[in-house]
Image (cartoon, rainbow, N blue to C red; front, top):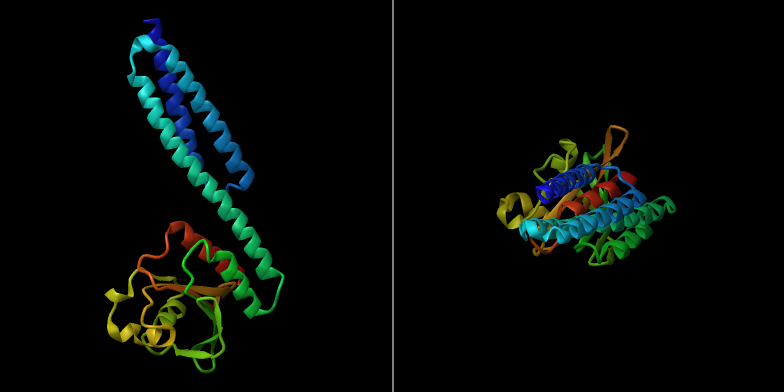
Length: 239
């Protein structure tokens, strides 16, 4: 009976610890220090719980197996925390790059160099909204890391992704252009290449006014995951 009561306490403590880490991971504004402290604390806590179950062998192996499973899940959570820490550091570095220069060409080159190992960046471009011509003017673009010197205009009165992004003041995220209508993708592929499969368009704003578009594109389908899209969104807020 005593062993059972002790095991019950272990299970209650395990449930409490697991609930705490799940709630913590939902918080959007954890900084690097808080993430590291959380990972270290929870790792030590579950390690202690595992040691307790090893002493209660009379109860059987089920509790120990359960905590082994939880510890494996914790390791996966720690991996996510470590990834969040790296992303925070990356965003910090990219923010410094953007705010330290007024040279758009230099900024795009630095962004490409910092991000090319983190995600597909076959195309990275910034377009500004020209109210007089009612179009987006893409003056600064990189194609596989090489600067594209020509200026590309996209008419917002036509059916294109720049228009959807600016007129609707919303993101455009498509995982596979091959599933889109040929008419809509014709202009984009004419400009950026027939091989483009994934696209992301983010509206650039000054206060509540849309002033341009930030786009990244890939020759691979399903190129961008949730974490990468959050990085892209954060970058757009700096531009």
